[in-house]
Amino acid sequence: MYDFKALYEAKSVDEAVRLRRGHPGARIIAGGSDVLIRIRNGKWAGAELISIHGIDALRGVKLEDDGTIRIGPLTSFSHLASDPVIGTHIPVLAEAANQVGSPQIRNIGTIGGNICNGSPAADTPPTLFVLDAQVELTGTEGARRVPVRDFYIRAGVVDLKPDELLTAVLVPGEAYRGYTGHYIKYAMREALDISVVSCSVNVKLTEDKKRIENVRAAFGAVGPVPLRTPGAEAAARGGETTERTVKAFASAVLGEISPWSDWRTSKAFREHIAEELAARALIRSIELGGGGIHA
Ligand SMILES: Cc1cc2nc3c(=O)[nH]c(=O)nc-3n(C[C@H](O)[C@H](O)[C@H](O)COP(=O)(O)OP(=O)(O)OC[C@H]3O[C@@H](n4cnc5c(N)ncnc54)[C@H](O)[C@@H]3O)c2cc1C
Image (cartoon, rainbow, N blue to C red):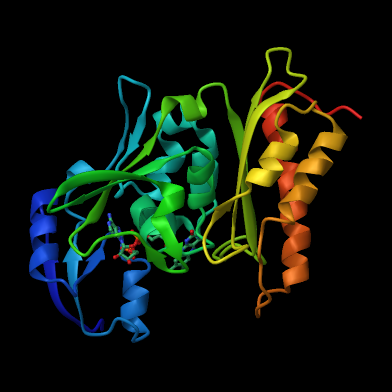
């Protein structure tokens, strides 16, 4: 049995916003894969819930005329992994979605819940960070857009006002056109385990494929929130596609992350893995872009 006080089922965004305003202490529930666990373990026992699961307009992926990819927050990981727009334009996001939990969690869990739970170890945020994604937040005052990297305040806390809900994730055309990317999750087990460290890299090569015109990198589980590593990006930007550039990029990451020791592993091991994942993700992104690594 789940101990919750009331369940309000919104059928539209307007109704969800009204319910948020009328029940300020209530929790939004989408797929429920985080919320129900918190209710069961007592953290959110007795909560009021506002379900947005029935708002079909918030589900699915659309390519807009200006090239922006609009992802509804209720889109499941399974949907993301097989969606043709995602597969054609940002396959690295499908790759990330495919590494979540188990088939059951991928069917029920949503991209909106993966962002709004504020977890530093969630699988889709590092890739959304490197895609310069924005989140659309809708409340009583209307909709506002915030870069996803500014949406995270601290571990478990995001910049969501009491009457707001996340209504879209937006990936601008200029952030993915000409780029190739790769996501790597390092976990202790192959399935049903959260990241020890994760890394997403996106690269644009010069026309001759010999240099890195631009690169963006982000990590999960190496600090209180997912983070970009601008110093490492600067170390590789403009560089030749050589082992030296890869090494400069990967070692610069170490100055920008702040991992911790816990029951899963030590800080030193996380640092080692972060450096290794950075190198591998950069090399694979370059290969996917038609380049190669030279000595
Ligand atoms: C067994 C298991 C394995 C898991 N493995 C992984 C894994 O490998 N990788 C991973 O990243 N995650 C994993 N998770 C965590 C979870 O499944 C994901 O974070 C998932 O994306 C949550 O989505 P949801 O729709 O179920 O969220 P919910 O539980 O419905 O909500 C999560 C949080 O987001 C808020 N929220 C949801 N949607 C919105 C919205 N549109 N607007 C505002 N707030 C919103 C809720 O209020 C709540 O605070 C796992 C969970 C379980 C139980």
